[in-house]
Length: 200
Image (tube, rainbow, N blue to C red):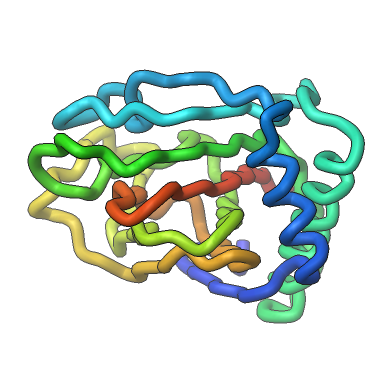
């Protein structure tokens, strides 16, 4: 897989109008956000509450209309850009799309970084889209998950490979076996769409 151990950052993956349309849908009063008590699923430190919506999971589609059309365009454009970077065609299978909305927290002890993680133990590609400008970088580490090594790296063992600042229309595409994390926002909301695909 030619994208192994690589990180790609691409701006304006959607047109300005598409960016605004997608933002408008996600921030409308009709969009069904669901509260989660900890965005890191209890993986460490203080609880970090957020809102989440699992739009697509293992073939089950929980979104339709304009939102689904924009998400399809987002995926198509991202994979086309990946092809331009690598010059290698590949077949991909969409597994999950989840969107997360975080609010700044007044009482947050310890690091602003959330717990480092990988999304799946099966080899996969992450496509992370930023809905609007925000603080709270995504941090991707050099350290990688290995299926034959069950050791969870300690925070002091992690070496930063790339920090990506949320910017409307920006997408970061990376090997999902890189341990990675988000950073809690301080200045306002932070909203990302996380897409996971498997290579056939």
